[in-house]
Image 1 (cartoon, rainbow, N blue to C red):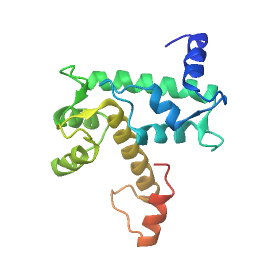
Image 2: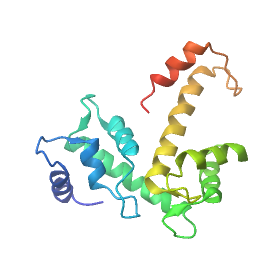
Image 3: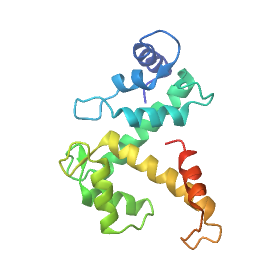
Length: 171
């Protein structure tokens, strides 16, 4: 973890318009997913939304510090599951990761996750897409658990209630 002074320098280099805030676009240009390509813009939008405490669509330096730590934690997590050190994870590595996180999912669901989050169509998921997958899965799981009051893995909701639940999530 860089010192606060180093992080301030990083923040200022990312804050291209000198507003004292970083937008999702500015963050996207500053991050690399390990493939020398910029981060997935949707992942940046998700992370800004997670750390934007005043809901102004951008993050200040304090929020950036928390986001930086979050990304570093995800980097360590990702590397621990990237068993072949390829810089991305395949379906088997994803299954290992999510199983270790406590998810019990079918093979068909893993195929769906690979189809949805493998933007490069190489049967591998890059770091930024892994973050997005995990954040989406965690957010949807939390929303489901709120409705699953008896913890049996089954909920009954009306269609509009389902739509309201999904559209109200910070995804």
